Image (cartoon, rainbow, N blue to C red; front, side, top):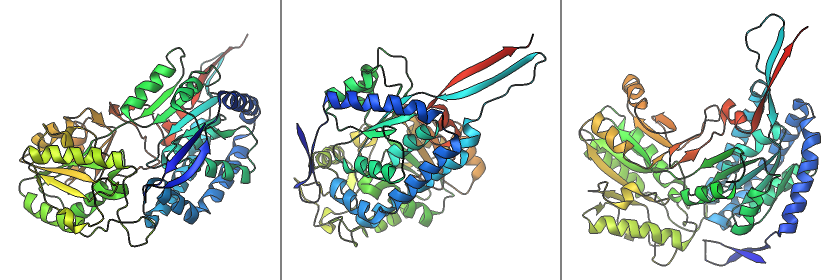
Length: 460
């Protein structure tokens, strides 16, 4: 059976490929199982060499990949190469800490005993990745998993299937032994059977909350590690002492980059009443400078959303908010390409919003942001925590001590000060509540793709 990738640029078929069969899945698992045992016995330095060659190979094709991404998911080509830069940054950081992160742990010495803890590979790791940041979401697991001695099988979104092909091409060019990295294009029912297979030793999924629950169902009869990076409704708080020019510029980018289709994008902003008017004025002015259009054109700074259905979902949130009394501060007429029945949607800035509106409590995943006035840190904190999600939150202030105090009370995986929508590979990428569970990146990311074995020898 075939599947089609429809480009959001003009709604035509960009790619048509075959789904893999269950027989393909079985063969892929068998190859991975055989290859992994030999790979796990290779010295870490040898694994590092293969991964570095892979990084160099795939990043060298950044320009071509940027065009492919524009066709597959709508991101402007002018921004496409940034994802590949991020891939190199994250992957090479994981290379740099692999030796320390994977070495045995030795507790205090005890006379007459030899004691230490090994970190061993899980075996076969399944990675299920989304279309919105198709390389960055997947590389977070693929590189540490391979470095730790695992084999990896990637099931990528059918919206961005060529990402899997690019990975395979680069690993082949790097000379990675066959079977260690593979991909499968699977229908949902076959993906569930794949994850449930006894040969799969760990599952790592990035996607919707609903998808996360389906992953848990698929592996309910196995006790294996499962990483789930799910939804977000990430807040920002602009304090009275913030640098307003800087905050407005960076929060506009955090809200509208990638057409707002980022799990850690800014979806709601709380601004102290003392600087609210100034912030709103500058935020709206910057938003109006965006150019919505064909992502293949270099001048485009805001591309279409991935699908018309996704754009319609955001339009429904906006309409409901307006019906309840919210006000839109950016005229859609400024963006003539924004049209009903298409994935092209103008950036929308809403004020007069509250938490009874879906746009303030339901993940939007599009170019819309609601802004509320607050009178204190305490009010901002209460509103920031009033969410089912907890991926990131950002504070904008010159007072680092106040930010430290707030950071201990915000229910989230990452707290930023004076930045947003960025993953530092040295820090753990994790979330709370409906955002999921597990860790990628940092030294802790290696812990999630390994298992512990204690060595306890008594001398006689």
